[in-house]
Length: 428
Image (cartoon, rainbow, N blue to C red; front, top):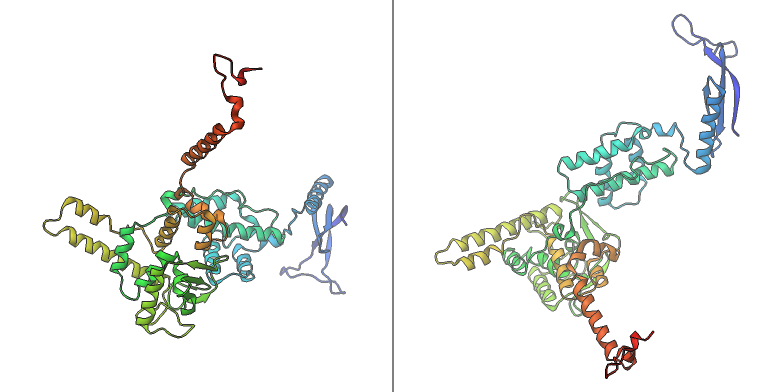
């Protein structure tokens, strides 16, 4: 029920010490302080909301706005919007069914904003856009900023759904433009992969191999167990991953959504893994295939450190080779090409695996399934530039079709008659 009616404004009394004055019945004592117009309504939960105005027209306009917002679903409890961003996000993240890694990423995102201590209803679109610009100015990658902005937008959408705020100030906020995929995706050459394998030790060598020849993510490779490799059928099953950046934070979790898969691998890879299993004495199901020399599982930091050592070893080997007497310029140039670029992480091996599949004619669905992407669109967004362009294939396909049509007896309508007679196409 909504209404606008005259209301007696009250001035509550206090004594000389500013203490409230009470009536004999225990209620606060007050005196009339003039008449006002009071607009009031009840929300969907039956809770009353009211506001006082000096003029009836102002009260009616406010009430009309509130009731219209309730009808259109844009209403939000003004008192709920006073909760701080930090308090709301703490409650919001706590009720999500996220993995440890996703929760950590979301927490990092929502804590990176400068309005953490402000009321969530006071955040404006300009504040969110300024935060995006600040993140870019301090050197964060566009993909990182987009990921963080996505969590910020998710939190604001949750606040809208809970009627904490009427609309999201993050709606329509522009993130930095992503680099073109052909520049963002870094693949290694055959010589670079060979150099990396040659420079790695016996514990890290098979780890690199499954990343390069099975396209596993770092965590998926670290989570491999003996039973995940079918040496007879030459397959690798991805059913878990290692998350965490240190030994303390390491945990075994399910793969990313949609990443559970069976990968068909070459005999050379299964032979390499069989030799590793024999050398390490791995014979019990449930045993992890890859461990560091300390006996711990590989994690994000330890694997990245080992990869840097491989990269540095390759660079040192190349430099020593090119400084030898009698090395030709061509040989020196070829050796320099074996160096692994400074920015190439272990994930570049996964990109290299994908690029090899594409170069050998695999379609997008095949590549998607091998990589464990949840949809083909993700594969296309990352690797579309690696597929051959359509121009030449369009010409070739159309030329073949045109040739077949021209050779068909049914094409006689296009055949010119002899002895200077007009063509059938010119007969109108």
